[in-house]
Length: 453
Image (cartoon, rainbow, N blue to C red; front, side, top):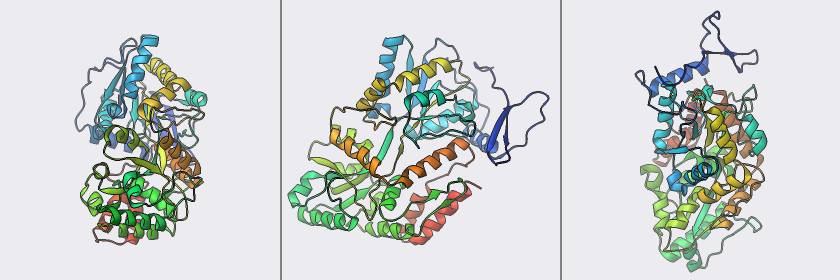
């Protein structure tokens, strides 16, 4: 038998409003009819573990054992969580064991652990997963204390908050400052300036490219997250859920904005290789081949550490007509149920989100804070972080609403996971010349809506 006691069986039913209700089953209760949420969780868990999994030998069932905290990328972000774990041990004597795994393995590892009834105490997860959604502890009390930014967390119909945002990320633009200065081309540095349009930016970047002899004007990460930001700036609201979470839709400006992006991938403005063959845009920027890089706040720490050959600068992204960034929670902090360490884990999470400690980890890891009223004094590039915070504050309301609906859908546990990234994958086909921008919208919406069916 596994080291943890078996969890009680949970019957999951829909109320008259169509939303999910949960109730503990008893021996006298009939077997509940399976609904979409239970089928999704069961199917995903089976896919993650094709055979019955044995226990992983995790000792977290003992209240005095180390608290296992599974995450990805801490070592690449200054070791912020490891530093805070050491501080917590010094203050309390409680050991928090940081389990840093490759990003591509994180979701599968936690799904396997849920299936084996061997979950860690705490996780920093990329999203809320239906496989383990019902194995999370309610964080509503902590949320009330620390006040996460509105729209960056969600409660279910019973008021349970299964996850808190670990930090924010936002899309932004970096320039190779040396190249722009060499070409004598001006650029905005704050939102107080008369921020450029996309037409103005592209003309300015062309001038830099031709004057300095570099290969390309711009590159963008191969991601729908970054592409959505571009769409927001060009008259689209992206591929967005409706208010009732029943359908993904796109406005009339979406195909036109996509057409512009597709045309920019012409091996002059943008290298086709980034989106078609996954060439690394980060490396292209760091080696001085690009005038501008459309990426995001998570690059700041990397550039501080690894760019020594030229000066770089964060600048406002172009607006045509909207000044907007795509922002959201970088990851979700969850406390898992059934470990025997729930109270100790809650104590650590509450401590981590205290203003002093949360400001400290944000400084170390280069996080944009996801809670209200936290001021962070960064070790370097304070002006870059300030610019990103200004971009978030200045974005249209619909951007935050999109994030809020996405989180609400995750918390509902009723959407099937996608096998890929529909907007990105269909856009790649269009850059290859196989389909039109209109077909990108049509195909991506069909895939997204199939996940809701």
